[in-house]
Length: 309
Ligand SMILES: [Zn+2]
Image 1 (cartoon, helix red, strand yellow):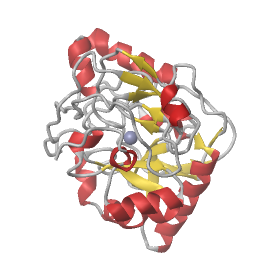
Image 2 (cartoon, rainbow, N blue to C red):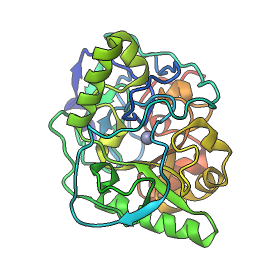
Image 3 (cartoon, protein in one colour):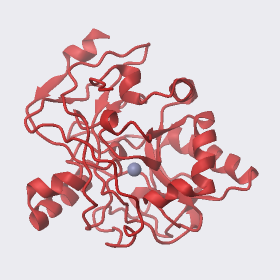
Image 4 (cartoon, rainbow, N blue to C red):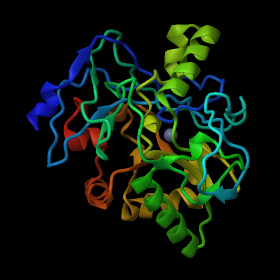
């Protein structure tokens, strides 16, 4: 327990980016803002699960990966990987989204912790907690579910346990007449770094931070998160997804399969990210159900950040 905290390394990095999903697009999101204002000092896990801390990811307010819809699900083999190169297209999609809730970016220089146990299923990755640069999940697989693109890219990958749960979730949705598709799941530290650096070159560091997560801070790097849309790809990673039946289904049933809506509406100041009804985080059913029933965020559950109410 306390060991975890003691092991935490404090870095004086400033970073806060927005968006929890971090797209790979190049279009800056509408100005969003990360929320947390104070560095999470120590987190105190509440139950037994030590939070491993991690970091947040980037994402423009609207995820650009919105195109293609459900195509094939592939599973299995290895395939290409390049996350850094693909990306969505720019611009698509941001048009109709509601303005993101303004959040406050963490102050520059805010202390950032490096997650002590990045492999923990309960690892807390957000703007204050970053995954080590060297961390790479060892059990990534291709979930056998449909994605909005047909290529076998690394962004289809998820850690084994999460992948199996995702397959069950998609199956459950199907039985209820809801057809889902994955949009973007795993993203490596290197990919995130490349993306972030490209944004910095393009818009300067200050601006880049407003819509892209710094490497190590994207929850997608855990291999436990995925952005989901309807199989038609409509509103994929965009605010308009909130009004879809797929979003309503996820809201009502994701926890039954071990997932939570990681960046809930109304919790922007706590999570540091605007509402992202499409971003699912795997935590296992015990945790996901408890968190969902309590109506709290992962940060609140672990008392990881000062909650401003
Ligand atoms: Zn996401």
